[in-house]
Image 1 (tube, rainbow, N blue to C red):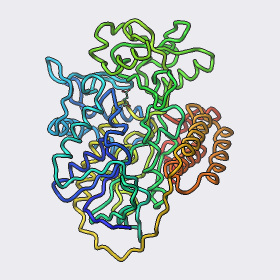
Image 2: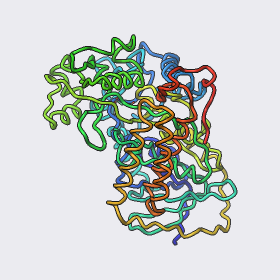
Image 3: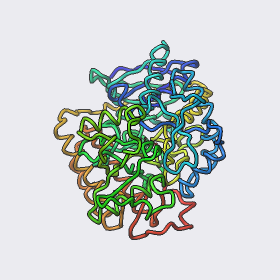
Length: 503
Ligand code: SIN
């Protein structure tokens, strides 16, 4: 096995990984490892935008209030404060790095999304915000000779000795195994785990690798029961499901059932712009009563193709013209609020192992993430991680014995079968509405699969570990709060407000 040394190892090529790498580029050599094509990430797919208090009628305090209210008592106030205060400067930084946010005659063009009290969502080319930001960051990364990006490179294990992370064991694009060590630190920016569920808006790469790598290495995971289900995925069976951005509702579209009722009136004062968990559960309730659900965006009319070009093209491909037709929608798994427990500088409980972006839990999202706070979180905390990891002295490399790690991922068809089994189990047993019986049955099924899935099936094993942790966490929280709803414990309980389930 060959061995290579660098200063920083960044795992993941979404907004968090790329921002970390660019922020570190001035201070040393950075290797970005990403398991598929460089563009394959949830960041790239993000449509609606990135929230920041840049509007005339806005302030970081207001942004903080909206974030805390939506997080239902479980946010870390200090982290939220950091997020909202650094928001406007982060937008400037991204602009400096080449992102061209949409503008109107009088300044930023700001959209509205659920649970925001004002319009504060910046966007790029209408509904291609993630692609707009990450393509600019990628361009910048490739301009820097001390940052190398390695696509199709799978990290198999973190190398941790005596509580210190020294590097990774990885399989490169030629399927050669290598040990890569870091003089400064390893940063996990691997994104989320939407693919653990049958219906998801998340990219195919989101198999929970970062959670599983961290867990196997002894890092703490927290709040893993909190899953966000986006209310409006296009109701056409595909993986991933195509998202109809919440920004469409922000422009005046509304949900109707097949009786033509604007049913959100019955569920929340903010109606279609209520927090996502409320809207998804309301749709679920309607569907349980046999209703089909649609988004009526006809009021946006002829401006739809210009404001939402990507959504327009995709709907038209499926024979739906949003200017005149109702769009069939359904909730789908979208985001995990929990993750690897970190402090405000992205430090985990393992020395020299850092995390940022969706894989990390800084506590900014609490029990339910405010729309469009995730791209912001990725960019804000990446800069903080970069500041703290670059300040570390170089690690003196010790003699380390690296075990030969077997990786015989040779049967993609078998992997697909096992992945689908996991996804079915999680959707059926740990979905929008949960209860003890279903969660326990889900755990039994997952444990049975654990005995079947062989060691070399890297992604399947990671999905399995992540699924098990989510189920165990969901079982432990005997209340309902934000993205975690238990029909056997429907109340939000004060005594759980301070509790974080750490695994
Ligand atoms: C959306 O465009 O609706 C998704 C934005 C987000 O997940 O915050």
